Length: 117
Image 1 (cartoon, rainbow, N blue to C red):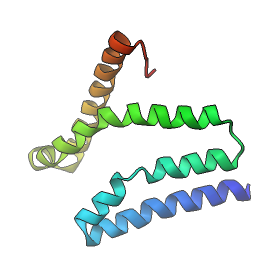
Image 2 (image 1 turned 90 degrees about the vertical axis):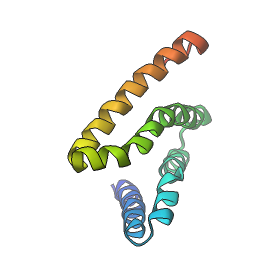
Image 3 (image 1 turned 120 degrees about the horizontal axis):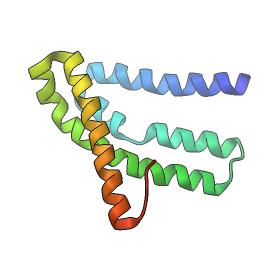
């Protein structure tokens, strides 16, 4: 139980630290938010918990493919925010990301015989 609480505390502290930094500096907050800190932390947790190398490798592999369809959302969000406000932009961004996931999955199935589902 202590280990689980430690993982929660470290992971939450990372998110809070980035959001607090973003209040002071858009660029630095964006840079730290864009770094794969959560993925690296997840890989560390999996490693420390004794997961096999294949599990760690799969986690990194799928993270790469799951990041790609989220990238258009970051470009569209500023425009959507001006047009629809925060809630509308967030909802539209989520829908856009889901559609991009579906599109990427279809492309990967057709070209590389890889499925993200």
